[in-house]
Length: 141
View 1 (cartoon, rainbow, N blue to C red):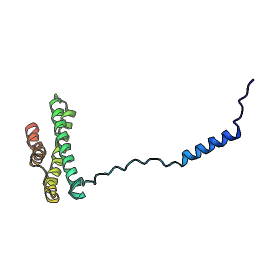
View 2 (cartoon, helix red, strand yellow):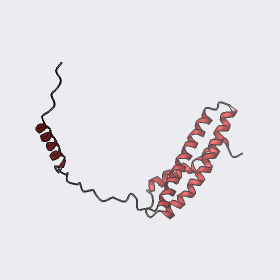
View 3 (cartoon, rainbow, N blue to C red):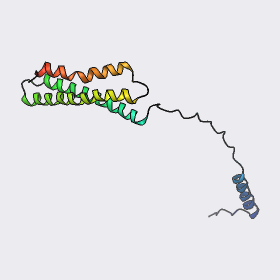
View 4 (cartoon, rainbow, N blue to C red):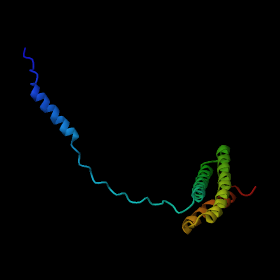
C-alpha cells in the first residue's frame, strides 16, 4: 500500500511562508457608510404620548364593548343570560367611554400639537354612543 510521501522540508517552509504572508496582508476595508442623523419620532413629551395611547385604546375598548353588547342583545332571543351580558357590555362601554371623554381633555391640554380633528370627532362619537344605545335597547329603568 502506497503511503503519501511527506512534503520536502523546503516545500513546507514555502507553504508556511505563503500562509503567513497572506494572513499579514491588509484587507481592503469597505468605505464606511454615512448614516443619516436620527430623526426624532415625536415632538411630544413622553407623558403626552402615553395619554394619547390610553385615549385611543379606551376608545377602541368602548367601541368593542358597544359592538359586543349590541350583538348580544340581537342574539338574546329572550335569553336572560345573553340579555344580562348585553347590559354588562353596554355598562362597561358607558364607563370606559366616560374615561375616554376625560382623556380627550387631557390629550388636548398635554399635547403640543392637537390631534387631528377627524380623529377627535370619531372618538367622541364612539364614547357618546353607548348612552343613547342603552336608552334605545333597555330604556332608563
